[in-house]
Structure formats: structure tokens, C-alpha cells
Image 1 (spheres, rainbow, N blue to C red):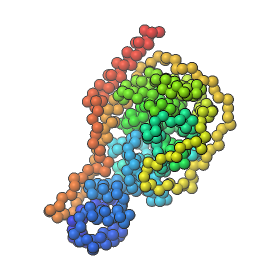
Image 2: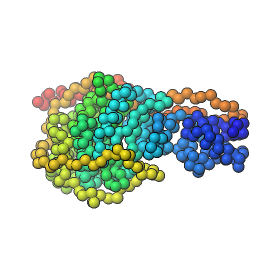
Image 3: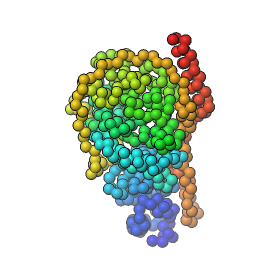
Image 4: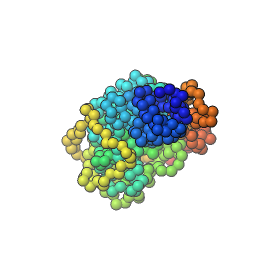
Length: 473
């Protein structure tokens, strides 16, 4: 097929070739079939035809009509649809050329960098973590200047969406979700693997009512390994900023200090959220939430949900202790403490599917198998309410991270350079090109204040808190 026969669709076909979504033979055949019947058609009509023929998805055709040709194919994955934005990047529904299965692929902004050698070693370490609650971390790579992470695709509804829709969850149901989460965490913690960025939006309730922990492996990439960080400071700060509602105090002071006991604190915040339909510190700016997680006590759960069993109050309080050593010794003890308050799985309501038109993922040959629960042990005694602890002054890393939060809130623009374009009819012009992942930055007060302003504010607040504690004691 000669380019002069394409008419008004010449630039669209040219971009379609550059996208690498179709091989040349298939493209020429389907375009020739369309233009033979519609010789004067415009690009939108050709795009609609390709969608109807299932050659392109609506997501792909829309991007191509906007002049975006890059980033559709990343390693073995072909991006089919956008699922939403998460910490560190945008999540896409993708299909693998290797096994034709569906995956969730997170694409990091172009500004991000990482040590791919160490990152791939992290992926291999997660292959041994097999549990129904854990969505395994399967691939990490770089393609066309874009970094990506991949997990098997899971259908269902995230826990934060369920609470937004229904409000407070019944105590037994909330504890059952926490129990399933803790069970998966316990298996990973035994292998010295941690989540690090646990929050309600990272817990998916699948179509069978089982909790599936998403983004497992992100925390390992944020933590320092062998003296070097796998991702840059900006990506680390962006991930911390997105999870401040459930971030442990020690991870806020040092964003790379992500540990299994830190997962306990996050689980306590998630349980608090499910039972009360609000986060422990729901109001305030990012800097104020950072201070609150370190030095303040949340509204007691007894005041928000007075009819909860007394023992459940004690479990949540112990999980949310500011000092790591005041929490449970390990996640196995958390399981024993939660189990008496959990509902039966038969009591769960029917799950809601929020990922539309996604075929159910087929388990891979090495799919995780259920891990037997450890033999029950006597439940530990409930800890008393948090005793006030002396505030600690911020470290250089925490101030640098808090300063980065302001710029992390605004996504960076992609720097894709357009390739030469063919000659087009003078009467028609192609839409202006932008990067595939361009977004308009959101302007916040933290941007106006700047990193220095946030750092000074954090120092002043910490010094005031320290002086107040010193005078009291």
C-alpha cells in the first residue's frame, strides 16, 4: 500500500506504524480494507473502524488521534487501557506477549531513575512469597526511556472505595479483611520481605471476597540496598506523600526506613479507617500529617465506635503505638490477636467489580498457593494506651523528603521528541504532540511555599514540641 493512497488518513497511519502496536502486514491489510470502501474518510472514522474490528482498543485509538505514539509497548507488555494513578506513577491494564495473560503495569514518570540490576534481584526474591493475599511482583524493566513495574491483574474493588461507598464496615468484616492482610504479610515477613507503603487503596477485594495486597515490592525499591537507593529521591517522596494517612512514624522521619514492624502500624491505621470510616489524622496539609503521625494521638476509637469489643480497641491501639518496640513482636502475634474478632468468610457481602470489561486473570503455572496458618499461640496481653513519648528532632533525610513533597505533588512533563512526519495535505493539520504521560501539574500551597519553607516549618514545629515536652517533664 502506497502512502499517497491514504488521503486524509496518512498522518494517522504513519503514527500507527510508529506505535509498534501492529505489524506492517496486518496494518496494511486492515487499512486497505477500510479505504477501499471509504476512500475519503477522516482519521476518526478509521480509528472507530479499527476499534470495532478489535485491532485497537478505545484507549489506544484516542491516544493516537491526539498524536501520541510512544509508550504503548513496554518490554513484553502492550498497554491496553488506563486504570488510574497510584503512588509513583500511572497504572495500565496490559497484555503480555509471552503468555497472553493480563497484568497491571505501573509506569513511572520520566524523571525517575533506578538501579535495574538490584531491582531485578528484588523481583526474584518475591517469587518465593506465595500466598492468596499477595499479588506477586513479577517484572521490572526499562523500555524507550520509561521505567515500569508489573503485577498480575486483579479484578475487584479497593478497600478505600468500599468504605467510601458503604461507610463504617461491620467489625467482624473489617477484622476479617485485616486478618487476611496480616496473614499474607506474615508469610512475606518470614522471608524478610515487607510492603512498606500499605494503605486502603493497595488492598483489593477480589470477586471471591479475598483481600489481595497490591503494590507489593514498591517498598523494597524505596528502601536503600547495599548503600544505594533503587529509585530517586523524588519518587520516594511522592510515594511517602501518597501514603501519609497510614505511614509509620519511623518511615516519615526516614523514608527508606521501611520494615515489617512498620507494616503493623499501617495495618492498624487501615483497621482504624475501616471501623470508623475516617483516617487517624484526616485533616491538614502533608507537613501537618507528618507531624501528627509522629507526635499526636488520634481520636480514640472508643469515641467513634463505642460498641466495639474492648479487646479490639486494645489490638488497634497496640498496632498504632508510636514506638516500634511497643507493637507486636511479629505478625504472627497480630494474627492471634485479631482472630477472635473476625467474621466468617460466608458473612462477607457480595464484592463489587470496579475494573470494567477486564477478563478474569488466569493463574500462571507458578501461581501462589495457600500457606497453612501457624499453630495458634496464646494471645498476648493487651497493651495500655499509648504513653506520651518525647518527640525526636527531624533528621536531615526527613527534612529533605518533606521538602521534596511539594514538587512531588506535581507530575513532571514527558520529554518525548517527535520523529519526522510525512507531508500532509495543506488543508489538514495534525494535533499538537505531547508526551504519552503528560499531565497538568496541580498547584498547591506547598509549591508556593517551596521546599525551604516546608523544611523551616517542620523544624520550628519539632523544636516547639520538644520544648513543650521538656517543660512538662
